Length: 366
Ligand SMILES: *[C@@H]1O[C@H](CO)[C@@H](O)[C@H](O)[C@H]1NC(C)=O
Ligand SMILES: *[C@@H]1O[C@H](CO)[C@@H](O)[C@H](O)[C@H]1NC(C)=O
Picture (cartoon, rainbow, N blue to C red):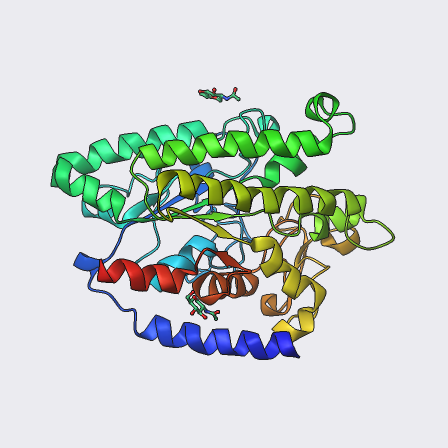
């Protein structure tokens, strides 16, 4: 009940902030998104890859009711953050529609299947790995420079909000993909986590060099509790203990790395979003958040609807708002809304060193 009451407060606060937050498009801040399927707005639609969400029932609750490449029944986390910024959703960087003034809204470089490491997601073939996403960001800046000049481009990038979400695939689509994977033979889990964190740090430093000054960095979520892992690796019908151990090692070290980076830079550029904590809330007490289940995916087949892909032939739940998970790995739009409310107004347990509403307030003064 305590969780429920806190959550209602956040919702009201979020609503107030959202209403007070309708911005003149000319003053709106740009938004850039990097990462994996949790934040891909459709880049993979343009690639020869099996990691895609461009057919029904994906998008069933999206405004157009069409599949867009988002791994959600409706809106995803970047869409909901754009709403908070008072701007339209960012277009996928590979979209032919991303030209002219649209470029000034920002861009989404994310690609389903990628991880921190270059060798994560190789089974998906042609995906945009992190280093390539950063190269595209450079190319983007060159294109914007041709429209508004170099000084304004630097300002647009410095003042932008950035979201980066990756790391989950380095576990599920690399280390734990097959028994005795190359990485699991190379590293014991604690050493692998250290390696991931040190590689992630390089990516964040590169993002800073490219001009990013406000970057939300999400952790991995409760990796072992997604329907796919309940189905394949669940321990006594519960979450996968091994993947929960991975998340428990990874997330605190990510927060620590971010704190050190900020200390080195001398300001709070990177903000850690504790998505593990955010999703734990609705995974342990789904009813408090209005879900009937956080174990069974809305779309899928097999135990927990957690086996294989979500396709037109899969089981599909009639009311997506009652499910925390849309498919075997990805939260429903409703769960994404809860996560974004916590990003906006969560306490320091969820957002460290500060939540997004504080960032927006701070940056509007400067
Ligand atoms: C990953 O690839 C990029 C370029 O494609 C390279 O610069 C980087 O060193 C690679 N990382 C590792 C750990 O091999
Ligand atoms: C959001 O951050 C501000 C500043 O840190 C804090 O005062 C506020 O309480 C936070 N929101 C919640 C709901 O904790």
